[in-house]
Amino acid sequence: MNVWWRTVLTILRAKAMLRRNGPIEPTSVGRVRLRTLPTDIDLLGHMNNGRYASLFDLGRFDLLIRTGVWDLVNKQGWYAVVASETISFRKSLGLWQRFTIESRLHGHDDKAVYMVHRAVVDGEIYAEMLVRARFLKRGGGLVPMEELFEALHRPDDLPPLEPWVQAWAASSALPSTKKPAPSIWR
Image (tube, rainbow, N blue to C red; front, side):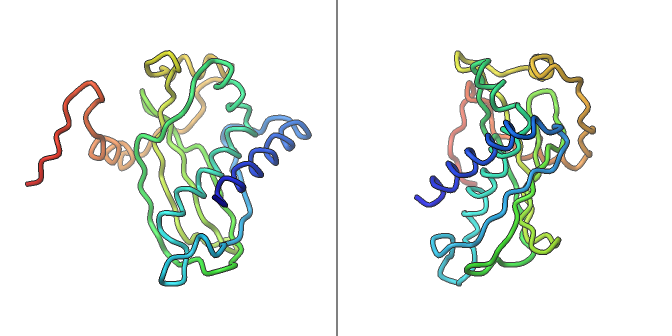
């Protein structure tokens, strides 16, 4: 439940910053400061690995709101869903430890936008997650990247994806929802 309160507070803070300062560039690094709470901790006394993804959502909300993308997407009747993600851990976050979630748009391919989220303490990366997200239309279907960039009134100025990111996206993809995906263990 505490992630709900953190989400509400993050959204309110990001909207206030957008009103006060105007939109930030899509290539900006968003930062959300947090502290590891007792509800984030696992039996080993450090942040539960599953909690990182939930808290990195806060960084995504913050960045999308402060760039103005959030309002535009809602106005168009679009929404974003995570298609895949991968996370790497370096160090553990302990109880009550302060850390910053840093979030940045990383690039895109023909179907998805990529973001990187980091848990950072005193400038040092503790964990990093790469997220592949798609924008969908509420009426059904995928939002083409050209349509997304046209609606943003911005040129596509995100850097090209590195080959390893393209390979990861291809190798981690599941079949389309229109194709069968039986659970068969070999």
